[in-house]
Image (cartoon, rainbow, N blue to C red):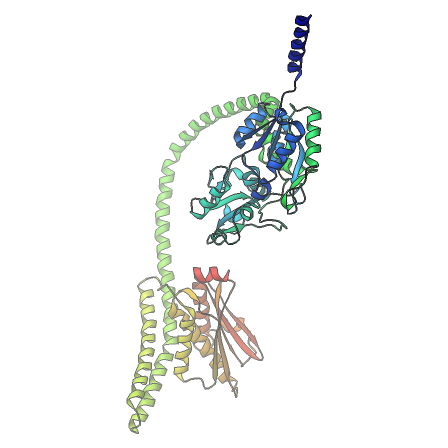
Length: 581
């Protein structure tokens, strides 16, 4: 009897051991959430140990790549990781049970995103500026630190696969991403939102070395993208429904940690699914090969028919090619004759070019006749004044030096005009250079004042100094012409208080010089520009218009009964043009 009783006990123990439940495998990603949120992990594990007992709960900690492999192999029952991993595993049957929440991020549906950063001295400020730059990220499967950022690029109309010139994955430690950006190994870094705030204290020098890119409005942390659900505890199909229920009830009833960090329920995963659909990841990874396979299944017969037609057209092309080559041989002599005609045409073009140069010489010759009067008149006036003072023995050495200096300046100006004509006569290019537009205008004003032909008041207003490319001599000739024309106009109507204003400013990529007077008249600007007079408002303004067009600018007249305004424009040089834009 004792033997029978002992045997029965052993059988019952054996059967009980066979019926004993296998422990629940609970996996925790080693890529823990933000530092402040990480403090919820141990209380969560303790709550589950109290619920199921140490022997019925097996906790494993795995890096993200290994965790994904174990989930796909069906070796994990419940896991704590990003909500992105849970949705990626949806095709394997994963289901979120609870989602993390806190006082700082109270909405479990919209908690974290990606933050793009760069060096503080970088010119990168927007998402568009990151195009063709180098990126540093933690992991290719990192949801908050990488994948959300790629989805944001797609939202902005870019192709994430070729947006960056290079992508370096530096490992799960996001601090390496920050270091890579600061050291210049990468132009841009992508980290999860709140990482910087939770990792580096306010007094850390790191805040002076980096800056965010494309910040979006957020009540929490810096973020460059839309916000997605927080970290989640999810179940796999290997978990019994009763176990999943117990886990959910236990975690929802768990006291919140410091900062209100605890567990709630996520009610909206649509945004995450849309992200993976765009990136063709997780449950939507089949889309990468779907089109090719579907196209092949549906259109195989049409592909065959198309290839047949292509072969037919290829054979036809070969035949036609032979015919074309035969025709080409017969046309070879005609082409040779055409080449000869082209040579003659080029020779004729060179003659036309020479004639055009002669036309330019005529134009500059007109400038000589029109413009040399002013420096010569000024020289004569200075000589006459100096002579009168010398006769009266009142000419001092200082006055004599000043007179000679002014005569020298007018002589240089006359010589420059003559050299310009000589260059054109020898078919040289105009002397093009970068120069100060204000200096050229001011030089012309001073020369005009030295002339002494205008007894009124001249006011100059130079809003800014501008750099232009062209001929400073020609610009001086233009301004001198405009001043002389204004003076002649005021004299012709006997204005009691003649007044001329010279203004320099920039607008729309051009440097402007505006010469206005308080005269007036009855003629229109078209009549003045068509005038054939050899002085005054005739030939001079025609030359001004020609010089303006040669510089890529414009010339215009605005006339009314109260005064006249002449406007001459010339394009700004590269630097001033960029500053203007």
